[in-house]
Every structure is written in C-alpha cells, then in structure tokens.
Image 1 (spheres, rainbow, N blue to C red):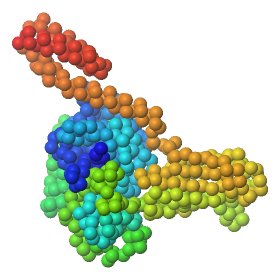
Image 2: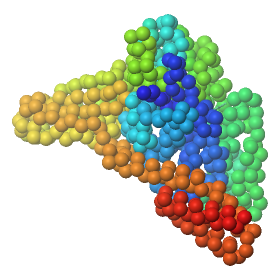
Image 3: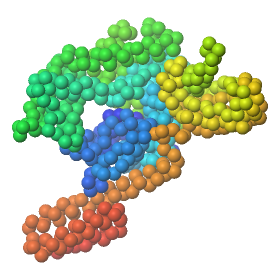
Image 4: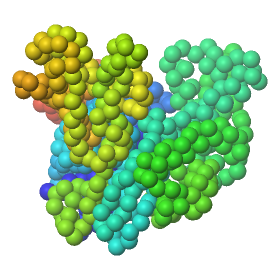
Amino acid sequence: MTIFGIDLGTTNSATARLKNGKPEILINKNGGRTTPSVFQLTENGEIIVGQEAKDTFPSLITQTVTEVKRLMGTDEIITVSGETYRPEEISAHILKYLKSCAEEILGEPVTEAVITAPAYFSDSQRKATKKAGEIAGLKVEKIINEPTAAAIAFGMDHMDTNQNILVYDLGGGTFDVSVVELFDGIVEVKASAGNNHLGGMDFDNAIVDWIERKFEQENGYSVFAEADDVEQLKRKALLKESAEKMKKILSSQMSTRMTTPFPGIHNNAPISIDYKLTRKEFENLIRDMAASTLKEIDKALSDAGLSVNEIHEILLVGGSTRIPLIQELVENKFNKKPRKDVNPDEAIAMGAAIQGGIKSGEIDPKTGLMVIDVCPYTLGTEVVRYVGGQLVPGYFEPIIPRNSVIPVSETKIYTTVYDHQDSVNVYVYQGESPRADENILLSDGIILDKIPQRPAGEEKIAVTFTYDINGILQVEAKVLSTGKIEKRPICTQIGVMSDSEVSAAKEKIEQAWNKSELYEEVKNIIYRAEKMMNDVSPSDKIKIEALVSKLKSELAANNTHGVKRAEEELTDLLIELV
Ligand code: AMP
C-alpha cells in the first residue's frame, strides 16, 4: 500500500508519492503542482479548496479561511459561513481535498500518509496536525519535520556522498533550519532551530503596515475609515493580496507599484492608493526579521558542533527563499552559493513520500536511505530549589535536552521537598529558559498521589519523558518505594482534540463534503432553472420556484435521496417547459 507524502503548508500544500522508487508530485484537480492552503465554504454549502478559493478570498471574506496552520495547536474557533470549526478541522478539509485529488488522478483510494510539520512545531501543534489527518480519513503513518523531508529528498539523489548540509526552510508562516549529515545513505539531523511564527506572511504584513502608515500620513485618515468589521477585513485582504504580489515581483524586479488601487470608499469617493515600492525599501521593511533567521542558524550550528566552514551544501526550501535579500544573507553567512537544483516548493512533499516508502518497505532500509532526526527543543518539568536556605518554586528542569536523537526516553529522579508530602504534580514544559513560566506549558500535568508520608527528601519519584519518532511526548511518574505509577500521553492539552472529538469532527466533515458534492451535482440545474424563470409564464415560474426551493431545502438538510428526487422533478419540469 502506497504511503503518500503531504506537505501541509501555511500558504501552499503539496502531495507526492513514490513511483518506481522515485518521488513524484501529484497534480491537483486544476493541474497545479501545489495547492493554496485556502478553504472556502459557500452559502450553498459548497466546499472550495485551493487556487479558486484564494482568488475569490477578498470578495468572499466571511466564507474563506487562510493561514490556518498558524492556529494549529490552539483552541481558537473559526467561523466560516456561519459554521464553526477548529483549526484541525479546516486543515482536515484541505487534506481531504488533496486526498481526493490524488484519488481522482490515480483511481485508487488514498488512505495512508506521512504529513510534514515544521521542525519547530510544538507538541500540541504536531498532535493537531496528526488529528487533522485522522479527521480527513487518513492513517497518519508519521509526522516528519519539514527540513528533514527536504534533506531526505536531496539525500536520495546523493546517496554516495558524505557531507554536511544546512537546510534553510522559510515558508509562508514558519522558519526552520536544520544541520544534517549525509553519510553512507544515512540522513542524520544533527540539530534544528527555528521560529514557528516567521514567514512570508510576516513580510506581506510588513508591506501592508507600510501602506497603512503612508496612507494615513498623506491623507489624515485611516485606510479603514468608515468601514464596518467585515469591510475592514475585506480591505485588509485586498491590501494583503496586493502586498504579496508586490513582494513576489520584487524578487525579480527592482521596484513595483501597488496592484489594488481602490480597496474601499471614503466620503463617497474610492480610496485611491498608488504607491511605488522599491526592492531596497522592501528589504528595509523585512531586514530585522530576515536577520533573525541568521541567529537561528548560529544556534543550530553550535548545537551540531559545526562551524560555518564545515557546511558543504546549503538547501533553500520554502517559497520565501526566492527573496534576493534572504539568498544574499545566507550566501554571505556561508560565503557559498546555495544549491539551485532543489525545488523549494516541492522538496518537502517529495521527502515525505520517500519517508512513506521507507515506512511501507518500498525502500529497503539496508540498501536505501535511513533517517535519524532530533527533538529540536528542550522538554522538562518545573521544580523547586533551595536558594539561600529557602524553597523557591518555578525553576525549569530539562529532562530531554534539545537536539536529542529521537526516539528518546529519559528519566530523572526527584525527592519530596516537604515533610509528609503525599503528592506531586508533574508539569510539562517546552523551552530553553531556566524559569518554567517563560517556557511553553504543555500540560499541567500528572498528579502522582499516595506517596508514603515521610520526612522531606526521603521519598523518591522517577519522572520519565518519552519522545517518539513523530515528536509526540509521553510522561510517566513513579514513586520508587511503592512502584505506584501515573502514566499518560500529554493529551489534556489546550488545542488538542480528544479521540471522541476527532470522531465527531470526522463525521461532521464527511457530511459537509457530502453536502458539497450534492450541491456540485445540482448546481447547473439550479442555474438553468433560475435563468429559465425569466422566460416562462408567471404560472410556470411559480412551479419552477417551488421545485428550486424544494431542492434547496433538501440540500440544506443534506438529504441525498430528497435531493435526487427534487432534482428529477425539476429536470422533468424543465424538459416539459422547453
Ligand atoms: P511555501 O509555504 O513554502 O509554499 O511558501 C509560501 C510563501 O512563499 C508565501 O508567503 C509566498 O508569498 C512566498 N513566495 C512564493 N514565491 C515568492 C517569490 N517569488 N518571492 C517572494 N516570496 C515568494
């Protein structure tokens, strides 16, 4: 059974599979090699994913969702066409679309996939990604890190070389950097660093902010003046669309003009914006963000124990690496040109497909590639410490240090700190600060009780963290004297759905797709009927209206049989009236 590779990106997604041992990108229903990660639910219940949804976003603002990857792992609720969704559910719609495209092209069911996630994605963001796959009806064989996937794709074509490569992955919403050693067909990630809130969208926003500031300075009022909430969102979407276009043009030209001169109306006159932006000005807008990626490179290099001179090749992946300033900064840092033969939009999905092949056995690990990855951040717990003779809480104690090879399991032994202490609460944090509250709280924990009540320091508790190959963590706490164990995956996290919520979401999404497909089947006949109403007698018009309304209410009720019946009746009537 083929295990597909899916790059579920912030702005674009892609699907690949292994064919005769080589990865190939699968085109979507519109012939695109990548698909914009944009979801639309129209008022009729029709689901539109991809380019068409992206193109109509500014005019269908309340019916469209973009950039949902940024919300993964949060408990944010997204309202679209009056329906409420969690981020995993929107991502599931995108995955379901990719799945249906692959099924249409290959004529076979697509049920298993390796999905990629930014290396720097947190535990809850990874879990949310996995759950999105499950909601879409996919068995998620593995979550792999995006830069690792790119290194795998590169490694496959360079099996016989031994070299250190640096993968610089700057996409629409996330930035990752990984230092990878290729050695005898083994792809070994030495260290990863990054920022899961930095990408091309931030550059678009920097242009939008610049336009807003300039407009207000010149006109004395805001570009959002006289706009209600929806209108403000619409103007913002138009400005963002325009900003992204300008940004892309500036990758090949030295200056450009704004492409959406009239985002709204003010004092009954169109708001007119016609600004020129030069590449230099754009570079100044994004310079700090771009420079911040160099710090992450230093962190990854230092964790890998390598210097700049020991990197043999640099791979640029992610659409934002097309920006000349980014290429220049990376090139200057290494004094070396990054490779040009890696397709920044496709490498990640291809690497995921190869990983799928390794998992399914299509690629023999003895003769083919092997992958070794790391956990990019430190995982630990909160402890109290004696400071100046006083017990002070709130310290972060690392248990799995960042860049440990995965899977990894580490145990640390703690003692009780109070006389007669009979319970402990194991809080789980991710981060690098010595203060627990400056790190990300993954779970407020595991309560281990029934500890024998003895003087402080006499009871020992073993805390074990196990981080699996998908980057998912399990925590166990054990009283050594009694053997009492508390063990559970970190599943009671904010932003992570329970199994029953996943089942309910799966059902909800299947129904939504069913409804959308029903609408798709009958939309032409509705269109024809509505057009015909203008050309028939008033009594026939009433007959058509009644049947169209019946068909629409059956659609709203998602009643397949009712829709078919109403469609037949309407078709018969139209034939009779022609
Ligand atoms: P990805 O998630 O890897 O598909 O990257 C998408 C991001 O790359 C988006 O923010 C795009 O605006 C950006 N991008 C794509 N092409 C270009 C280009 N030619 N110049 C600058 N940014 C680009």
